[in-house]
Length: 619
Image 1 (tube, rainbow, N blue to C red):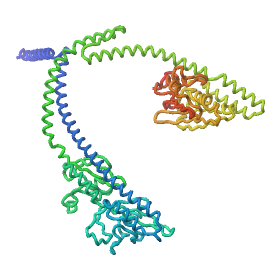
Image 2: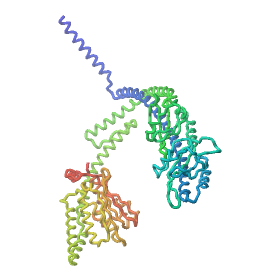
Image 3: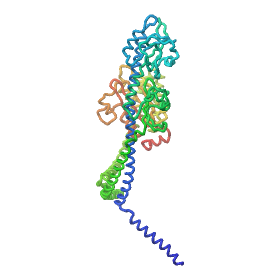
Image 4: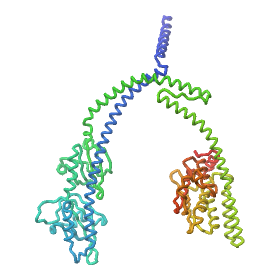
């Protein structure tokens, strides 16, 4: 028994080892078998999702088309209603501004003019009427007799007109019951347009109300024509607070047979909504009518959308199944075609890894493998090129910064300034001489900046202001300088000596020789994470043929006499902060020039300054 028990574990271990070896043999180890199996499984899964996605996409597209149709139809209908209301406003304006404003009611009668305007627009109107502030009828067309029991001041359109004197007011549909009409015994459904008007009685103003009763049937016919052409949906019109103006089932609603979601629709902004009303899902599209705040609402039951979708489901399933079979067949061919180029590509990469940087990447096989080979080759070439460019860029940066340091003290400027100081002392203009010396000392203090090339914008602007103070005295205030600097940019960092060269250009090439007073403006502001400093002058401007070459090495643009120079400033900014920053020049001949400095907003901390001084572009 003891030996038998020992043999059972040995038998189990042998079986497990055999099973493990068998499974290892079945496990695909070649790239071809791995791709074939993987592609097949992925293809089947993809086809499943593809079928579902196709169906959902078709469903979404169909719903979108239905929504777009509703939006277009609603926009067209809203436009028609707005055009009609606009005509009514124009009629009211014509009566008020062209007739009532120019009439003295103490000695003149309005009836003829009102009748003429009514006859010209009677297809869309029911009546015109003008009332005094106490409700007395002044004039009306075509009916002139007011009912004895018509309480005009209690009418909603009358009180609303006086509640907001400057506006025109549209009422909800109602039966016109103000006048006696012996020739027509019909009841007229109207929408009243009322406004408060000023009446002239012998030079004394009095208030009144101008009433224009529009024919409600005009709007009703517009909406009925829309509802007839769209059997799957309907449109209704309500006020901004949910009062009904038009509904195709207005009678059923009044009798309680049919319900509508007026309150919620009135709260919707313009757009598309899905709602569940009385157990029915539906799409609601809302558009607001100008002048009135009325809301035109389109309602489409979602059940209409699903009609005919069953055949689409069968079609999607058939297409997915056929595509899956085709992809399984294609996977076999693709794996054979892809395997060999991948091996060659792998071997060429191993050579590069071994240090043979002069070796070429294999390019061939399928388009994907060929593209991968070309991409790797381009990357290798780009790495080699960038290594060379880094060396060149560092050399250019050192040269540019050296040029900037060498140009910090312009000998010509210094000579002229000292000469001006001597002249002032000889002329006993001591206060001006002291001011010049103080400004010159401050200018040199910022220029030196303890050898730093990165300084706060506040210091850079102080340096520019010192420079301009000196120049204004030298040129005997031949120009003015205005500063408009946002306080938040002063505590940010900048490359040193970038504003003064722009001001120097503005003086010598802009306003120096002007017959009239020159104006120079320095404006600084921040937008999001960027800082902009503008130097604007009203000088002669830059010729259009030279403007595109100012910031290039092209010899067609003159760059002499500008201190550090615009191109130097532009390159120094880009070397320090990146290609997206630098200068932008806008100029019109005889109009002036605007040069904009574009910098990143970098807080003026010592850590940031040291990073920029040592490491180049700010990260």
